[in-house]
Length: 344
Image (cartoon, rainbow, N blue to C red; front, side, top):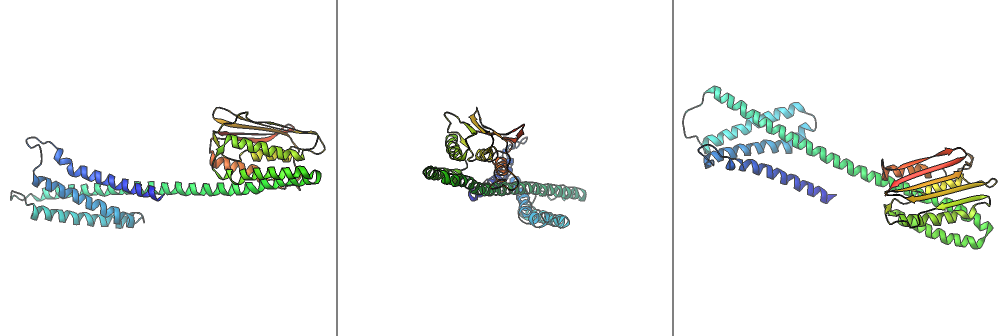
């Protein structure tokens, strides 16, 4: 961020230098009838005028605009500018009179002097307005850039917070399964603990990245479903269809685990026939997940680990793929359906 700021400052002052250089060089390329290039005396008159413009411009830039305009002291800003313009015009007049006196001695009429004074004042006011316009535009861009940097930092912090919520939630559900298996088959429970170690490697390390490959995410889902299959009752059926050859295209990690967890939690009954069907496929530029399960919602008293996953998912989707994802879930007849699409 510091390098970008320094580069922007350098570019800004380079632009200023180029503009003033063009203004100072402009008369040298002007072709007037009978006089293709200004002589030294005429050019010095012109250069002094441009330098006086620079003085008014940068006194406003560095002093008057920050001190009075930004604090909305409009009257003081106007009065100080009028005083500045009068002082610069007086100094410019003295330079013209004593350093570069005119060749003729004819004094202009008072009417001409007043018109000249008004015309010059108007030019200096135009310089003041140019300084205000450039300064305010630069300040707007600076504040907008700062706002975007702060928004990015806030979003990254929120994403990290959501991930930190997801990991214990995932671990809680998986440990519940292993606990049930310990009472049934100690040998299989040991294998499940080993498998859990592999899953946690993905959750704790791979998911720390912004994106993982589709292949790695599909391997994680396959291993997770195998672990969750442990505690399924005999009358429950489970179908899992994943891409046969998942690609290496990037996708945000752990997006599909929440609806899958939800299906296992609310789609299985220990007394009645139940089912879970999970289908994930790669389309041209999207990854699509469809989950259907029988609907056996938990009682209000059984909320272990619930209420985190799907809400967490929607927040992450809005941060990672704003306006580019599709997510819908709800009861359809006696089934519960979840549909999620994310861009690749």
